[in-house]
Length: 226
Image (cartoon, rainbow, N blue to C red; front, side, top):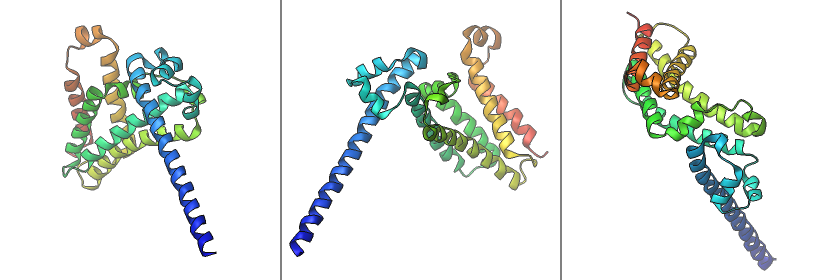
């Protein structure tokens, strides 16, 4: 019985190690597919990218790709999740700064601009490319994860506004509403700026960073208790 126990224990350990290795291999394969997909989507966008090209660049059969991602839309939303996670991480760093709430909001807006400028591929996937039927070909779990990551970014802004209300810097107003107004304003300015070089250069004639800075200033002046 003693030796049988040793043998069984060794057998179970081998199974555990094998399972762990398979999980790690699957995760590595999934990350490798996403790495290639990222380059394809960042270069060609959703409509220009194809599963055939992604499979070819991964040096895998298309059927193998579908073992990890059920559709092109699922690959796309997986990258959206990545983008929101990166943005949330940067926003969290700014939120933790020992500054007044108005200064943190200014820093968040500047950080958002830097995210747009330095991680433009993610920004375009997250905000500049609209696929209205994308949710129909994505698992509920992945869609919920994407929504929750985006909401977490907004909650960071809302928390900063609530802190400003609590310290008496900002007037009493629903922080979630203001967070959405600020988010919409920043995105609206960036999207309009991106949309048309004629609009940007011949009509607006103002640097994007300056537009964003002025927009945040006006919003903050409306929030502050005079």
